[in-house]
Structures are given as structure tokens and as C-alpha cells.
Image (cartoon, rainbow, N blue to C red; front, side, top):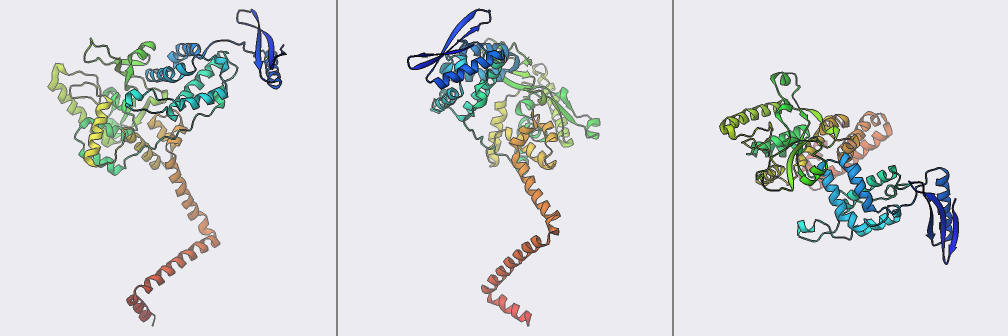
Length: 454
């Protein structure tokens, strides 16, 4: 059990514990007041009685992170996640709080840490060439990562509880993405001279695909036969995505979930990143998406054109079986599509958007067409959870709620006499006042009305 010892102006909680090797140790924990010491004494004794007491350790956050990355990150993260998480830890966690003992992290400590982060310069300043503070979104990403890490620390019995669960990260308001209307998309497609870009827009809008899914789509996963079209069963299977990945991250993960690495132009040059065909990030992203028959015919025409290019280039054609690629078969990067979109946007005089906006437009229209059928829409978008659809596209559901209010008015309140009379009387008063005002300003009309009344 534990005892309280007074030491000068402080109070120490003294207790004995056994380490993992069964050796006994005496621990002294100092507090500024007797009340704090008494609370800690009760906590220690209670946990010892329930056999859930975790012995104190001097393991630092950095030491824990090494274990967390090796035993959890390598198993759970995809290359892009691995790379981005390591950059967050190396830039904002390890140099700031890495030497702090894991068990010393409290909710107060975390709140102060987040406050200090927001005053720091962003690690991306060298890229942007101007000084920027760490954004609330970056702090939010750090919070998610550390909350996950400390959950693992609890599981490994390195700490008793996860203090990040009781902390609210700084509020971050995401900017709403601008999207094009269907008329704008039609205008863009009618003026698009790049068939790769036009097909990418079609696939993103009709199938709610991400840019990586479009560029990684292979003909073996496109089902557009005569029979498929006749049965309205034309569809694509999303099983792979094209992605740019950090070589060190790929090596650390032993190329997990990577199906193919595209060769670089200069094999003797040591590149930091490579382009790969990989498994989608989540299981829900692996999906079957039905396509409109019109798009099926567009794809068939595009396949005919590709076959002509194959014949033209002959042995110089590199066949990766990609749907969207250069004329000689080489894979097409995301930057090529984005540059083409920017050029098309400017030539058409349309508001600037990001390519992902087509996916948003697609989801918006599908929610409208299905009257808010989230599950059916989620099947096309590949969102891992339905609430992700409701959060991002809540404005569409709000429109349906407005329509529901009018339907309620028409189906219920039309039989509610007093309410309807009041509405109708209000409308009549407004109409009469408007008519009188018009007559005052039009003597000729007034004379015609008086003559008609006679």
C-alpha cells in the first residue's frame, strides 16, 4: 500500500511496486498539497487492489514512437499514410515533446502543447517561400495520430489511460469545394481537346471515382461488351489505384499492397518517389460501379483509338493495360490531368475547381436523384462509412428537408382551416395593396377600371 510523507513544503506519496522482472522498487511522487497527495494515494491503492496498476517508467515519447511505428505503423499504414505520419512526427512531435516521459503526458500538457504548436512556423515554409504558422488542420492531424498512438500505449499497458481522449483539438473549418453545374461540365467537355482529360472527367462525374482510381483503371476491369450494354450491366471494377509513393516508405513497408512499380525514365538516377499501382486505401474502396450506357460507348470508341496507337507505335508501345494513358502506353500522372484541367477552365471562362470537385458534383447529383439514398451513393463513392457522406454532403440533405416542409404543408396543413385562411388572407392583402399602389401611379388604368365598374 501507499503512504504520505511530508517533505519540507511538499508531500510525497510513497509506495512499493514490482517491475516486469519481479524486482521490487520504492517510488516517491511529490505533490504541492496534501489534497493532491491524498488523491494520488487513493488512486495507487485502488489500482493495486484491482491489479491494474501500471508501474512507473522513464520511457520517453520518442522511445515509444519508435515501437509504435515498427509494431503498429508498418502493419496498418499504407505508403502515403506512413510517409505523411512520419513527417508530422519528425517535424512537430519528436523535436518539441519527444524527450518527455510517456507517463507525464496529461490533458493540461496536451492543451499547452497544441497552443505552442499554433505559434510555431510551419515546416512547409521552405516550400511555400513565405512564413506561415502551423495550421489548425495540421494540429488536428497530429491529434488524430497521437490519439491513436496513445490508445496503443494503453493496450500495451504502458499508461493507464489515454489523455488525448479528453482533449479537443483546435477547431478547423474546412473550406467548401466549389463545384461545377451539369451545364458547366457539358460546356467543358464540348470544348475539351484532350481525350485523356475528357475521359477522366466522364469517369469522375459518372462513377464518382478519385483521380488515382481513374489513372489506375485497367481494361481488364472494364466490362462494356454488347451483352453488358444490352442488359444495362456495363460497369467497372475498382481494384487498383495509381499513386506516387516515397521510396523509403515503400521499403519500410516492404512494398505492402503494391502490385507494380512503374520504371523511371533514368534507371541510374536515385529517385525519392516512384509511381506505383497499389491496392486502394480501404476495403470499401474496392467496389463495382455501374456506368451509363453512353459512357460505355465512349469507352469503346476510346479503346478503338488506343488499338490504333498500339499498331502505330509497334514495339515502342508500352502496354500496361491502362485505360487513361499517353499515346505510347506510358502511365499518365495526376499533374498532367491537373494542368489540362486548369487550361480548359481558363479557355472556357469557368470558375476554377480542383479535379476532386467532379467527384463531389457526382455525389451531389446522385443524392438528389435518389432522394438522399446514402447507402446507394456510398456504394459508388467508396466511402468507408455512411456518416462520411452525410457530413460532406449535408447541404443536399438540407434541401430535401426544405422540400419535406412544403410537402407537410400540402398534405397536412391544407386541411387545417385556420392556418390556410390566414395564409390566403395575407396573400390577398398583399395583392390588393399592390393593385392600389399600381392604380395610383397609372391614372389611365384607374379610369379604365372605373369605366368597367360602371
